[in-house]
Length: 76
Image (tube, rainbow, N blue to C red; front, side, top):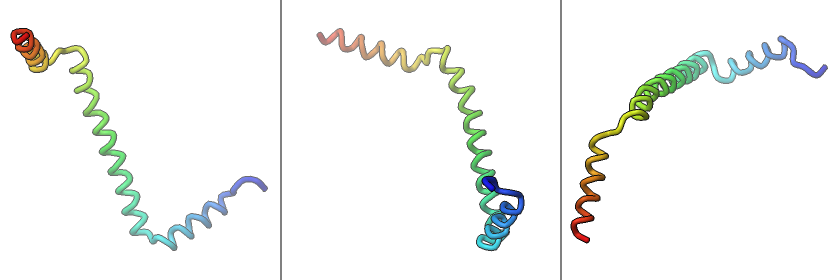
């Protein structure tokens, strides 16, 4: 009485197919699958960059900070 049986889900599926059509449902599925795939690739690409930057000091940033401090100390 409280749960939905397989027949309820089949009727819902039939109504969705009748409303949207199989072509539109196929396009929605492929778009969703492509979005998930791109998201996973983006997360995987971000991991090595983050791991490389955690342990290393970027020289350009360090020299520009030290040069800025040296210049500010000479004018005081």
